[in-house]
Image 1: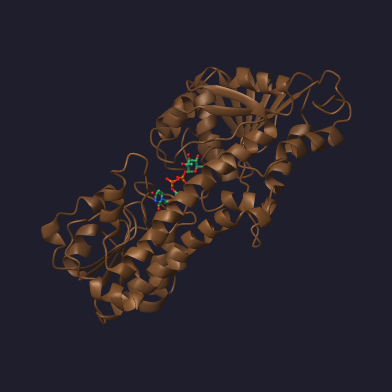
Image 2 (image 1 turned 180 degrees about the vertical axis):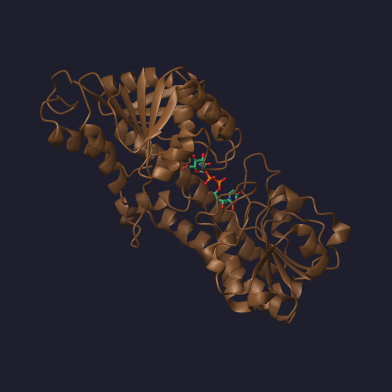
Length: 425
Ligand code: SAJ
């Protein structure tokens, strides 16, 4: 079996490597010559548990290659980004460009699978585009006659940090443009997926993916909203959530400095922009989660102002614990806003960074390590729940003024209460 994976990012590269491990010959296609060179030399350009060993193995065995140029294959997997524009409207330009590239080599018997998170109807748009570019091929679901190619949508669902495990163990939803397309795509996923593979229509599969991430966003928004209420009441929100979750039908998520990453902060907008008049809840959740970041910036600034000139440690820049991914990170937004305002006072601690990102240029803020920060900073703002922060013993931080946005130090003396009360009033 020959497989082409278009897009060698956080999803495409692990997917290509896992398929190559089954013995299929895989070509990864990317627009970046740097990415292509890195992969061809058996290395990786993204940090993900066990990915380096897997990629070096399949490249050495010759089952995975990378190129900027597409070649013929039996199965094409599209794993390119789907960002949104300033008005939150989804941009499927990369998907359509990938499909246009596939059209140049497509032949009867091939299968085209879209994995990128996409607005409902995108797979049908891909089908229509291929039909226009290749009138010599019969596309599925248009005229009722037997189609020459299969087209399906199968969203990725993997969690960064667990990608290689979840690629294999998670259930997959496989939506065909026609039932025959779904069956054809199913036989491909069965090669490497141990979880259940469930078939449906492409539109239902597209909406399922958006629904999963909107569900998580709405639930995190509930926790973030509770944290504001608890601040105002002078109650510890972490304790309230722990206690409420003892109810057999309550399972509240964790508040934080906002929601980051490239999925949960983006995908709900695809539902809102498709049906704005019937999505007030999903839209509010987005606004609550984005608003929480502004709230944390104000809270931290009020605390720092009580310590004029003192060094302040901002713990973490990543969008969540134990990863090196800073995309759409609320922690980075908070730390950069504080650096812009308090300059050299700000000491960033981020074990997953070797230098401060561009957002800190010219601010005077510096990157340091956790031990130095504990020695020198009387004020600490916890922004990410990395294990290395979680394990700081109480006696090294008990005397510090702490704003803990992740609830990782439940035993911390509540030195910030006056600020909280002042902000709330
Ligand atoms: N977060 C909280 N509180 C929580 C849980 C998360 O504030 O209780 C924050 C995190 O700190 C982070 C953000 O939410 O900033 C998102 O983190 P996450 O771990 O919830 O999700 P992602 O973005 O790493 O991955 C999600 C997953 N989707 C779901 O869990 C429904 C993953 O399965 C998807 O494959 C991925 O999006 C994707 O690619 O769509």
